[in-house]
Image 1 (cartoon, rainbow, N blue to C red):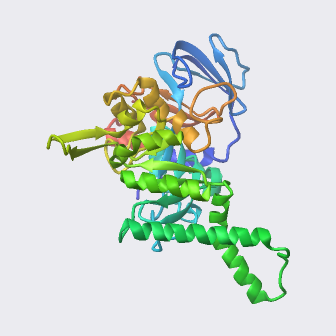
Image 2 (image 1 turned 60 degrees about the vertical axis):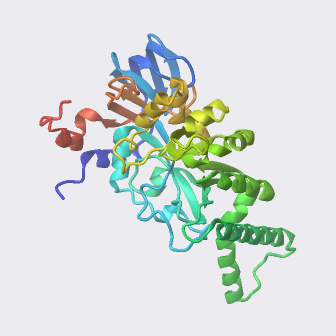
Length: 411
């Protein structure tokens, strides 16, 4: 291995640096939360957006970037992914007691690519080949260790309605058993008059181990964490909604395109959803016998459902959130809705809508300075900013220089 890529090292260091004051001048501002502005300034102070307008002033200690001819928008938000893990699924099917904390590898190229691509809030969850997969975590792609990268620790849990093996009846039986067990544990714990140590080391250690294994499910039932529930077909949606109603927990549906027939139920639930990277499916129309393409985002948009688009780094096109947003526009989704799906709506889905996903006064200064319009297909991230700190500059990206064969790094 020749070098540890400089952009990674820079990003790791950024996770430990204090917030920086930054003034971006003459930008074409795309705030996502409101109308675009052809030419304006943006001031970030103490890590948060402090002012937006023309002719803003700053003191001598403030870094100034002239963004004339370039677009400025909020950093992308990835609402759900299993990338960055050493393995996406545990061997056992019901593992609510595990956390992605123990499986995230900060040195994986995924985080390097996320810095380069402008994805600065990443919700990492266990994979879909599970029943209950354990706790997820929201990270920024910068920091030496996972704790430095963490934005929200263990605020979610992964559930799958699609069986990794067997059938959906057995999947539901395992899910119901886990929820019933958690409910009994919670009821017994709340009813216990005395929870002091018994005096028996073995008994107390056994009880502690049981508590730890069941605590995440108990937190779900107490609405302290949110379930992200993967559904592959309409019946999965029906069962997921029924299960959440019965046990009274919060959930966000993660929808494969085959769930389109359940659009009315999804709309009635009145919660934003997460789309898998594959957003359409071809199937035979039973009435005409012809192959028909079903575009889940277009169907949901017509029903008034808010959704977050996601990406798959291992797929050339689907790796990029801008590409996914552009695909939505090709499906007939309005531009503003498409951009929100990879920024503000994605942030709202993971509980960060008040701090991430748009450029507004008081929000975190996570912004991108782009070489072109984000949906043009020609846009590069020229500079990436997290809480006012410039954590990426394309002109200094040696890996990109090597890939494109630019030689001197001036691109």
